[in-house]
Amino acid sequence: MTFSIRFTGFLLAWLLIFLTHPAIANSASALTLTDDAGRRVQLPQPAQRLVSLAPHITENLFAIGAGNLLVGVVNYSDYPEAALSLPLVGGYNQLDIEGIVALQPDLVIAWHSGNPLAQVEQLQRLGIPVYFSEPLSFAGLAHGLRQLGHLTGQETTAEQAALSLEAQVKQLQQTYAHQRPVRVFYQVWEQPLMTINHQHIIHEAITLCGGVNVFADIKQLIPRISREAVLEQDPEVILGGGMGEENPVWINNWRRFESMQAVRDNKLYFIPPSLLQRATPRMLQGTEMVCQKLQQARLIYGD
Image 1 (tube, rainbow, N blue to C red):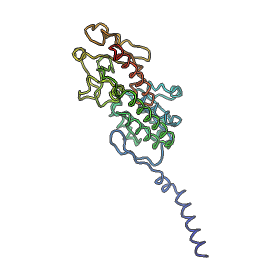
Image 2 (tube, rainbow, N blue to C red):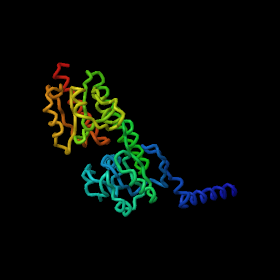
Image 3 (cartoon, rainbow, N blue to C red):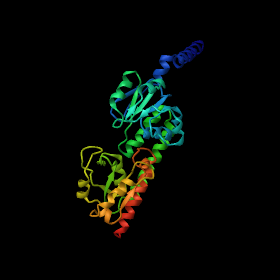
Image 4 (cartoon, one colour):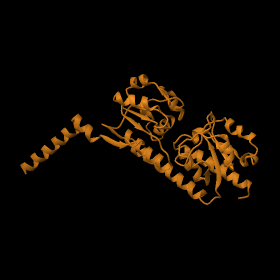
């Protein structure tokens, strides 16, 4: 009996030391994750001071309930409204390294294809952990939300956000899977003229709605193309964003090409860029808009 009491006391004492000793406690909560660039990222514990280097990253952190951990963001991080009050650390394509270091983040979340890699590597050399976020599909976006949840200790809210996203994608698949295919040109940018290939999440959004991306087979993720190439493809529908949320000037610029089917039938549609060109849960709103526009195009032909 005495031995049992002593042994129990020893176990309790050992457990107290295990939980309170800094080195051991940190190792118990340490994280090792693989980011969207295929890199292993290690943290001693969930991050508490975050810097976001892209608007989609900022929005996703708020979506999983980790917006209060942000101490710095880049230009155009404008959603939700709370993001507008956060300190700016430059633009996504030109970072303020000194400003980032001064904020003392324990994690920087970067955009692999959008941020200047030389500057991101400079942050890493200064000892700041970096996690790359770049969802290229809705499955990748759901996975990314869960990953951000692990990185910030917000697993429960991140899981809820991911499950909601997956349910909405499934609903769109069921609704539009058997609709007539519609040949679509999606414009990402005007000068230079840019579109997306089959690896881009916007391609998946178009496909979910029964659209066929006319430039899907180009090798580059966001290829530069000529107007002549678009004319040659002669899409049934042209979709695009613009320089703002209510500025369809890029779409209107196509109206002078009256030989194209999309122009003849007035099937040129503006989609607010923040709803389709940012890989966030709000992208489902943009995708639903795409589906509605393609359905309008089908009705023109009586489909």
